[in-house]
Length: 324
Ligand code: PMV
Image 1 (cartoon, helix red, strand yellow):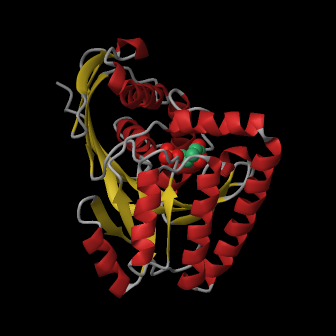
Image 2 (spheres, helix red, strand yellow):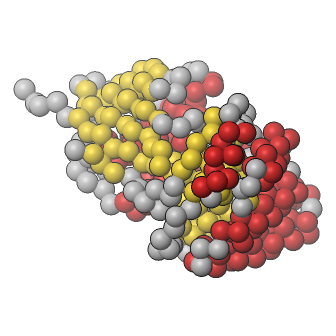
Image 3 (cartoon, helix red, strand yellow):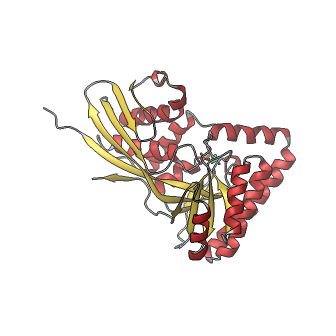
């Protein structure tokens, strides 16, 4: 009898410090991975089903090659990329078993913290390690293919940061460039509790760009400048400067129409309680804000955010890992 094949892999969540949305149109973004992860356990089974359970409210058994077997509408955007990622990983090794996948995320889904990228990356890493080994770049490329099933024209930034971890400059042409700066940045992540769909927000920005190219180009060029200045501020660890650039970036995203009242309110609370700066992070429309804080403002901001799911994160340096 064959021994049971099982594997576990994990990938970190992420925040976008600068440049979301404009990164879709070729501008640079700065991203950091956070110290909360997604874990995927994969076990091979002797049929062609993929049974998924998760701590994120979805579970089910699906036909391996049939993405349409995911009937429940509200889970489609979560489950279809997982199925596609698992299939692709097996195809790389001409493997054709069924799978039991168990997914555990340490952070919420659909709030801009990169859960979908982290899930597909950890799935590809876990499933492929049942049969062989894939390079990190291959895992990253495959997760982007899986993301394309549900997201509208993803830039690839989420896949890159959740694969490699750390602090990174990303643009579509040059891809991911790790920033070696040792950083002692303290970020507070606050979840507004409002779920949103990245693809919808990316589409709304596309519409704005088509309707008012001049406005969009102006904002994109400002985002570019802010990101360049932020790179310098990170290098010199000038957190006061970095914080004000974050707040400026938030105003830009407001003008782009992707913030909403609750996010503006949370940014405001963070600033009033001494944060160096704060902004929404990710696609917007809900989801999270991040605040850059020092020791004393950290306590104050956390206290004021007690009605929300708020946590402190440092920049996590571990990307995707296959665990023993
Ligand atoms: O899925 P989110 O909320 O992390 O947003 C992704 C970032 C965008 O720039 C809005 C889209 C992209 O593909 O880069």
